[in-house]
Image (cartoon, rainbow, N blue to C red; front, side, top):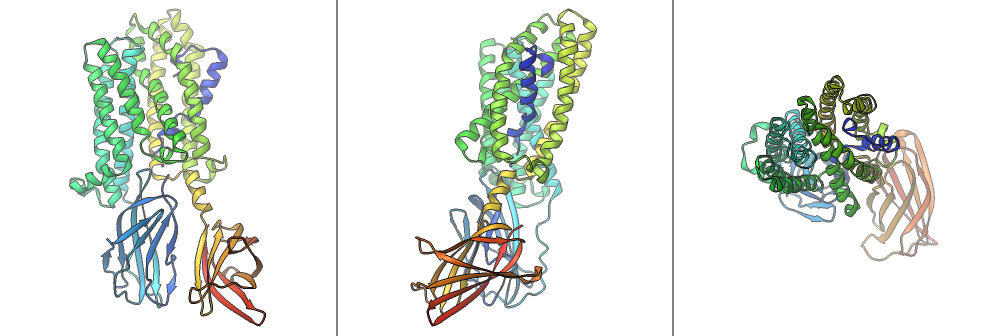
Length: 534
């Protein structure tokens, strides 16, 4: 991009800094995460549970639920209800003793399928033939390639058509490349609907011809992206072949708007809160990327051919690009703050690691662009044909680097952003403890190691009201060598008993006991276990 710009030194530095966040909005990315289950994963319950429940960090839509019994047979769980972020599942009749596996596959708000399983035992654990969910690398490869094709169609294809009509003002340069990327984008976008269905239902690539896969893929939020992106690529094709300049110009503008809108309809960033800020940020960020990438090949072809319009096209682009850079800066900052949150997440999460790889590629790209701008561009404008040839080769190298960045950015499809992980970490852990004389709903916030707040809603064993004189919470983790941690609770205005002076140093399964002083002469104790996440 910088090769095609002639900006004041200060603005050039701003542009280079802004481009560090170039592809953040095009990440694939918030995955819903499982936050609580009933029964809890690994639990051993004396009798068959009366309900099965899965709670997630965001609303989900179930795609497939099944229960694998101790003998290895599986039963589909088709009767369930959605309550906010919780899927409540009707328990099949006559569950036998032994270990059961509840396998689930849901689709989150960002359109990405998420799968997993929990194991619980009735009576006592037994052997189980359930091996759990395996990653289908063929399906992942097709999803990755489909996303790259979609990016190429939008940024090179739609962007190229827009550049022809607005920066080159009708000069026909790079037509074959633009037409090819539009075709690749159209094929990749269409096939991505089927690939999404494969991933959603957890079936192999050989099932791609089944109609249910395509309908499932289109029913996710990514389906909206497929429909709108297809329309954008078709509009760009119309603009490319149109012989009427005004029709081509305005059709290419509509294609640019539709393609950028398509990216804001699904994905990690578009699903994040606040959506009134995030979706426009994705939209504007995508427009800025398309304007830059789309102009690379047409301008390089003009320079290579020595076309009379080449220097004029460079000038038009350099006049317009500062406004695009300003949009990149503003949208990039918003997306960075919301998606990554803390700088430490860049090293501590897979999402951050992918971003660092992408950033390394961008730094190489920036170095090339700096050479183009400060060494070659001025010489080209003075008529130096040798410099023009070097500039064309350098722009070709920039184009290859952009393709590599596409490949890295497409990998975000398989990683949750740090902000989603923070949301999961902040989720509380809870447990119901039932005794003969008293019972309690205990909640630990957040449900992870460190300083936490514990609250308990106390009732009588028959569900009637109970007003204890005193409540003490006792935590221990014998397997980790942690003895009793006792904290007296105080009664809050909402009737719950709370203590905030509590530190749980380790993750894992903690034993919890409540010493409930019912009267001056009567105390009852109830015990349970609660899972503290990593």
